[in-house]
Amino acid sequence: MAYLTVQASVAVPVNPLGGGQFDLGEGLPGPLWLDFSALSRFRARLVGHGLERTLFDRLVGHCREAGLIKAGGKQRTDSTHVISAVRDLNRTELAGESVRAALEALAVAAPSWLAGVVDVAEFAERYGPRVDGWTMPGSKTGRDRLAQVFGQDALALCRAAWSDTAPVWVREIEAVALLRQVLVQTYSIRTDARGREVITKRDADDEGVPPGHIRLASPYDPDARWSAKGDDLFWMGYKVHLTETCDTPAEAEAEAEAGTSVLRLITDVHTTLATVPDVKATAPIQQNLAGRQVAPGEHYLDSGYPSVDLVVEAAGRGISMVTPLLADHSPQAKAAEGFAKSAFRIDWKARQVRCPQGTTSAGWYPVTQHGRDAIVIDFARTDCRPCPSRTKCTNSVRGARMLTLRPRELHERTTAARTEQDTDSWRTKYALRAGIEGTINQALDVTGIRRARYRGLPKVTLQHIYSATALNIIRLDAWWTTDPLRKPRTSRLERLSHQLAG
Image (cartoon, rainbow, N blue to C red; front, side, top):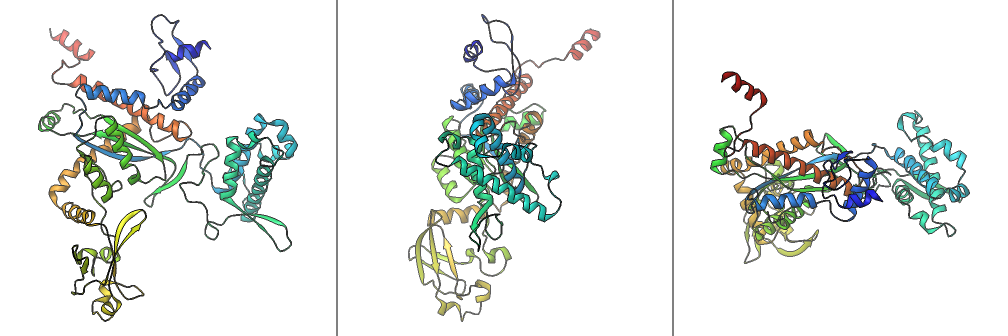
């Protein structure tokens, strides 16, 4: 209790990411050594009370008041993958380890109940050591049989936990609830010709598995997810987005050429599940920046972040998104031959579209697709089928071309943006975004941000926020000691050299 009383009076620990010695201030006993377990509880309290961003927000607010960060400037954002603090498991290992995790939790929380529903000795022999692919049978038949045993044990344990005679709180234990979810996503239950119940492992191709954003990957970290980027990057964990200032006034460029530093500060940290696409993070990031009163005038992002809807919405809030919009993905555009969407002339007032051969569309249908307004354009088959250029226009079975357009403002904004981003001047301006890669590398080297220290999205978010806070402090220190308006710091070796020269 004495620790809890003292802890409540500490505003910010010196080292919030690890154990160590803390100076608790004047009038308090000691320096006090805190164990890592105490810090774990401290982190849980921060997250539980929604205070994980307090330190970062206050630092950014102080820099804003000091004029080091200004709203309406330039900022850039990029993301990197974060590897979770748990083992990578295949589907069979996940099933077995989920049973083991539930048994371990029940052995502590409800030992008497557990002993009454399972053969403890048998289960202890099977699930005593952790489930490891290296110790599994070498043959496919043996592994399939073991997967079936894991499924049968999981089903028996879940049925016991959800029976009418089981205490309600048993099924509320996190490991037990996760076991039930793993059972559903990994196995299917059916009745064979003899009326016997058969549990089999789901075939991903035939029976399907849940989509990645809801599919559990570990019984110990319910928020970790498998994701992929490109053809060669696969990971289980999270994703973190970093946003920093990148103003480049003429005087700052001159100072940079002279060898002095230009202050760039991180203004937002946004951590998501690994399966959340970058485009879903754009609006939350800009809302966070606006909430801190540091919303940029120009926001530099790569092609994963924008959609034309987001560009228009941001412009309405005074933010110009400098980012390449994705190109037309129609087969004609990809093949760079035939009639892409840009080859058609649109008459918005007459609600008609004219094809390159001079034929006018037969239908104009406003619709809603994936929650967004769109317009479907239909050409008559009687016009398209005899057309000599039909093979350049469509390979549709129905023999007629169809187009899907966005509303006029969005369509024209997309067309203008794609035209502009093909110019040298735009490419020169957009080159400013590349500097965010250096910030990510600094975060990797200094704080190890790519590897999660904790389990669960809330605590991983806390880690990233404190890491960004540390980077800002490092950058502020570097800038203050190299500011040409301040006296530069002299090293001991330089002072010795001056003494000897004198």
